[in-house]
Image 1 (cartoon, rainbow, N blue to C red):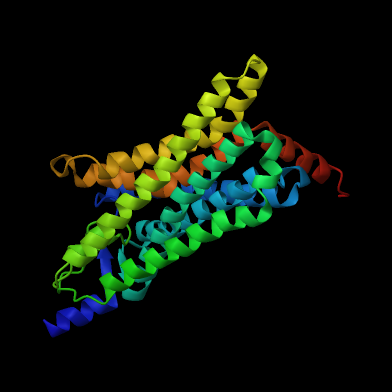
Image 2: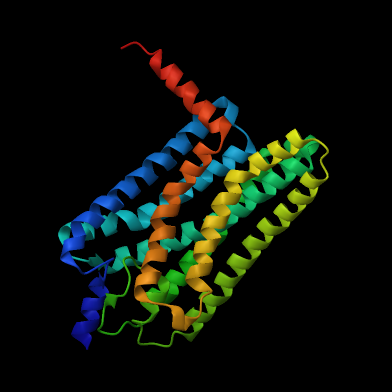
Length: 313
């Protein structure tokens, strides 16, 4: 057992997406395309909202951080998964597994609260337009970003430390394609009740509190829109919320499917697909949703292309 525990301390084995050899190459190509699209889209959004002077508003400040977060948790998972497709060796060192879990928790929790901050920003913009620049001052924007980062880092460290200071059994195969908390708990020999309670309480708090802010914000936004006399005003108000609302619906629908369905309905394949969706596909979709549905972002892209075309060759 001592020798087995020594092996566990050195590395874990990830089961990956599939064990069928004929699917390795097609899946590698597919996920490489998804990950590259995610990196290009989110980096592009970060650069665009930083460089363009017309996008220096609270809305795009939050969007820049959303892109950074999407880039963060897709990068925490994606590259290692792609390497495993190529090398056919699904091992991950013990410390890397801990780091992957810590970064994934940090970014996924941050995303929930950044989306809440974006909902509040849209509420202020539509319900208090005359006071928007006063309420959404740079200091408040930084507070609405810094608090989620600090809180997420705290939860990430607590969860990761609690798991990795516990005693693992000799079996080191993780039933997932990345180091996630729940599959890791099944490998522990020591009692997992305290860790499970921490995960359950904080997961429920994170989902409910962040969703509550979004729902209250959008209920107040809808009430304000219905009170508008101008059809053009209602259309503009809806258009400013459309992209954010689409992102919120996609993410929370996936998380609900993943965590709210009965335990008896869970299967390895469906859980894997849901995990792939929110770790890789949603980070790819978010910049697309904001660029395709947003006239200001498309205008900024056109201005950058125009400026680049004027450069001497």
